[in-house]
Image 1 (cartoon, rainbow, N blue to C red):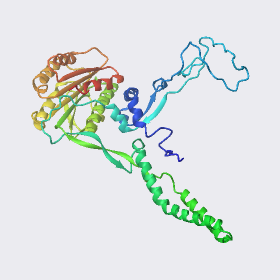
Image 2 (cartoon, rainbow, N blue to C red; image 1 turned 90 degrees about the horizontal axis):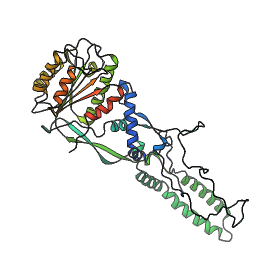
Image 3 (cartoon, helix red, strand yellow; image 1 turned 135 degrees about the vertical axis):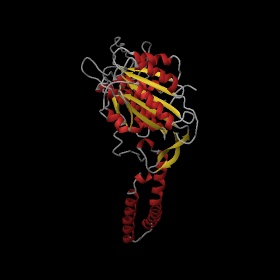
Length: 422
């Protein structure tokens, strides 16, 4: 019987065929590990793959065994202590050895966690699962395109997780048949001729030796045909189908004033990088407008938004006014789904916070589909938070969240952009 063994370098002891099944089975534990990994990463490593560790207690299989009590008849073969009919005393309670293995013990022994590597695509898929832009409406079907994954037949190239065993073995069988069918047919003819000569008195001895030698050569050639070859491998092919949706724009407003220390700015950048990856992975042709502000607001490109060192005082309304101007000039509300995400430490001139509330109430919230605000601070909330919180009570398309430490970023992100119930 032939054995089909995957010896490629990326196998490393894991079952490539059942990889996706394993991920789906332990998705809860894997998603928790992924969310924990987000907070440990640097800003530049947010979108890379991850090494996932799952406690052994979460991957143990159920085990059936006999319970305590009752009378049982058993056969103990090969012992030299008992004879037939002897009765064996029941072991004392608690004296038996359990079948399970703990993760740790007082003797210093235990089991390591189960560790495996997930790819960048698998990581991002788990990271942004069940997320969407809230209140998206189909104004025009000419810009924003959502992607849906669907099966698209088979391909000769692919990742090990998508290998199709049946198709690969079928291709292997066809190749082996094509390469050895003629040889097997010739072998059958030679063996028949050899049988007749050996059973004929006075048969030609030289011809018999020549036939045996030729048969051995044919057998070696047939055996040399490999059972499986890379040419035989077939992979399940998955493709993205474009689903037309509405055109949309996301305004990203970030406070870069002097009150935002480096740690606070890093947390704001982490939030916006998650948002950027989510938007670019899920939607096509969605436009993003970046606005940085201190006492003055400025529209910048992606690189300057994340890496510029400019700083100053704090006037939040400058960013809101610039957003309104850009929207009126380039993104008419009746043609675009408009979204905004603002990050700040909440520090603002006391006289400016009411101005921010008025701009939001009269000019921004009536036209946007969704406005999210995160405040990154360990201090008590100031006037800006109170203004925004009062607006949340009156507008359903606005949400505010508080981030105190890096561990709060991903849960807050998922809360802001979770998929809405239909």
